Image 1 (cartoon, rainbow, N blue to C red):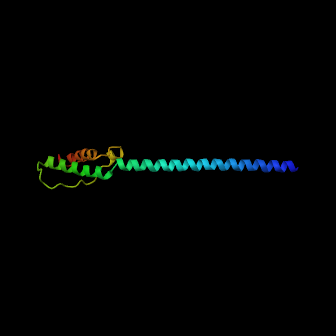
Image 2 (cartoon, rainbow, N blue to C red):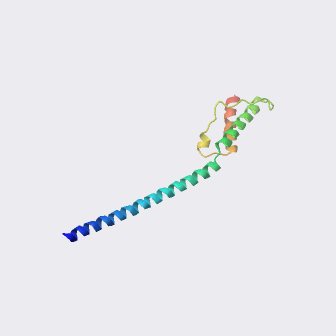
Image 3 (cartoon, rainbow, N blue to C red):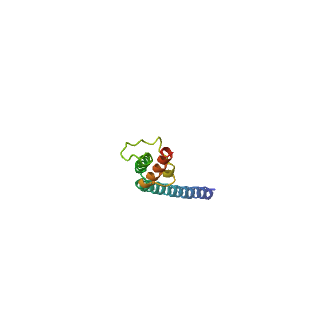
Length: 111
């Protein structure tokens, strides 16, 4: 009976150690994933600047307004809204915003 008791304690101890090692592995993997995701978000925010896209959109809209009205020195109207669908689809630069804004301006003013 003594031996059975010691064997039972030994088996439970080994299982506890193994489960602790598994928990540590899971924690390490979670920390690694958190580090990687924070690095990816830093990279993506540095490459994708919504303010530059919006600035390009406003400038493109203004250019279309002046082009359609034939008055290059007239004050521009702001767009009623900024269509962010191209931005969401990965077109994130100033130039992409300008193109989208110009198309929107042509639809509004070149009728």
